[in-house]
Image 1: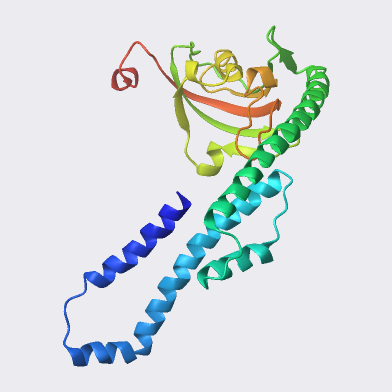
Image 2: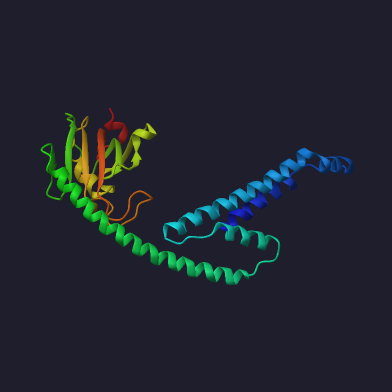
Length: 257
């Protein structure tokens, strides 16, 4: 896929040249001597380098997250050598080494995530115990904790309904990983297609209310790693504002009337 991206960029540049109208020899010579034409060609080459460099930079970061440190000077040396036909490894040898490194990265990530998971379980339990001791917090039988920030008096959804909400999600250390407020746009979803903590918690709310939920990992994403901010067995905190309910039994247009 990485090679394909570079190839497509190169093919695109070649296609632009092929689409130019035919010119007489004098015009062609003038264009070849033009400094403007040189600038355009240099920028295209630079753009290709940026694209390839971005792929390499992302790979460098991925391996760093797996405790594999790669010397960027050696990466640049490999690029320079292959471009100048003096590489000390064949492509098959290079690919073999990369496969070995990929296996090592996967093994390292398993160990890293196991340690994160253990730490998250302990931290989550401590956070839940402290939060649950507050008099304004209610803990349900499943372990979900909620606090009423604003009491609404509208309808209450069922698991079969679609709801429209504003929300902000953080880890227990306050790191924000998602927010409809930041996007300045509420979101809608079927209540039976989200994490268990949301399915249970939203059914406790009336339209017009705002709750703060603390969701244990088993009611959130469990052992899954979700993006960069939600590591395995993370306890999550959500502030949720219930704006509207669309009944699953009625078309959206009818429900809004």
